[in-house]
Length: 132
Image (cartoon, rainbow, N blue to C red; front, side, top):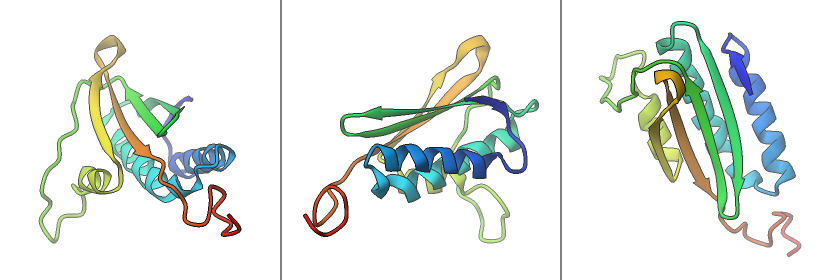
């Protein structure tokens, strides 16, 4: 998907990602991936002047990779936010909920920030229904 991030974009992208995860039988990853993609889209709003980005959701045999690409050369960096800071915790949250993340050079001088979440067996069977 390519779009300009607006006030409701994160909610729309979360719904799309959730639909894919449920379709792929990876519903256990929903909370982590929704939080992580929301944080990356918030960074586009804060740090990319034209707010244009692309989002890719890629399924792999062991999990999901999400990529958020933009035209900004500014690389994200983890910083320690003070107790009263209103921001600065997004990448720390990302680090806490995903298995891996990083930044790759993008086209036209921009970048792609990506993260991966590995599937974990659901107790009681793959469907999570408990019927096994």
